[in-house]
Amino acid sequence: MSLSIRNRALAGVLPWIVPVVLLLAWQIAAQLGWITARVLPAPTDVVAAGWRLTVSGELWFHLKSSFERAAIGFVIGGGIGLALGFATGLSRWLSLLLDSTLQMVRNIPHLALIPLVILWFGIDETAKIFLVALGSVFPIYLNTYHGIRNVDPQLLEMARSYGVKGFALFWHVVLPGALPSILVGVRFALGFMWLTLIVSETISATDGIGYLAMDAREFMQTDVVLVAILLYAVLGKLADLCAKGLELWWLRWHPAYQRGEGV
Amino acid sequence: MTEQSTRWGVGISTRNLQRHFGELTVLNGLDLDIRAGESLVIIGRSGCGKSTLLRLLAGLDQPDGGQLEFAGETVGTSDHSVRMMYQEPRLLPWKIVIENVEIGNVESARAKFALHEVELDSKAQDWPASLSGGQKQRVALARALAHQPELLLLDEPLGALDALTRSTMHRLIENLWQEHGFTLVMVTHDVSEAVMLADRVIVLDGGAIGLDVNIQLPRPRVATDPSFVGYEARLLEYLTGVPAEAPDETVPKHKRATVQPESGYLAISN
Picture (cartoon, rainbow over the protein chains, first blue to last red):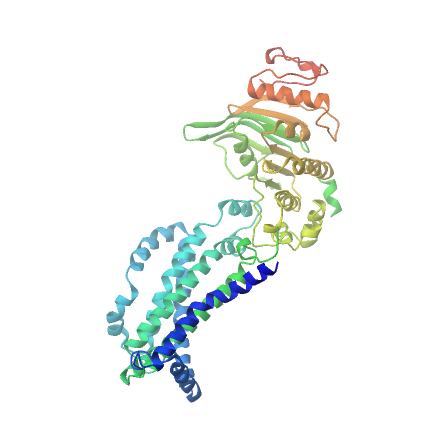
């Protein structure tokens, strides 16, 4: 019994050992001058830089710009992806009409469009939002289409024979059946969203986390660059946690998402 | 909800019913009359057309020829409530039990009553994933009952259940059928289940009725009753083509060619 408690404590500690050792090694190496501050400043310096930016308000300013771009782009791109997925998933004709084209377009890496996007929209806000939206469309489209196509045909047959049709059929049977797959699409799309944001903000911007990093590079402020990179990591993790939260709530009927209840 | 008990099942008749899948003839000129309120069990080997017949009755599939009439009206023009229980419970996993029973605009009081009838009141707020196989099928039964069917179709709904649960389900289905008076048509390949529930058992053979047996046993039936066993033996004998050992002489052991209709046990169509 006491052994199992000890094991559990060990299981809680174990995942932290490697990061802590790495951080300590990094700190010591920086302090002893083995690594110059220009290559990799000490973790304490990075924390100090983060604190400085937070207190001056700069951090929030850039964070807000990036968040807005990400959110607007994601809503537009995700919305289009969802709508296209519903259209092709629900209508065989629309699927025949659109799916092969969409599958072709999706194979173009959307970042390859950057020169074209700059020609179209210049280097202002529209270009960045366009890129983020483009990055979010396809993961959501593919998974929505796939999810709807894979709704259990037996459940559809049952529902139809019980008089459920039209929008009610979509709302009570098709959509919940496709939801697990759609949420996988959302998580993929969130990943693409941050990736696209980073790239588009480093190209040309006057605000945002990407700008913060590029600006700091100009002045060789490696610590600020690291702060920006860490911010992306934190934001990415937060977005993923939100998506996971949605899964836990919307898929609470699913045995895989139920904890401690049932059977 | 008490008006349920005064409802009557619908009578069904098929004439020269045909269904083909490509080259394969599944139903070949089937003539069948089902009395209103009757409990009919269809058995037969795999691929004999029993599930196809059930799907035609459910309106899930259309015949290639012949007539299918409910209460004297061609199906499609009439509006009779037909509900089906499938081999799988087919509950919507994202809806709690009571919402599953409410599917198809059933008012909540009626759904609650149906759930009460299958003795699952206490599970109303649970997710289907937390139910046992037998409980899931009981929810599926409640869902069908909530629509007050005139015809209830059962497509081997108990095949996946253990023997004990199955026999509980037999009692439950029998009681509800007696209480509501709907017409019951069930497909199974369990001969014992057929004798347990049926007023009449038909054996489908080559897309037509091969054997048509009235089961004249008082209810509730007991599987160890000698005449019960006799009926089982008779059906098995037809299905396997091997004469079965009749354990008791209360049921005369005929060869098929020497069936005596007046004995009351057997009536062979054609």
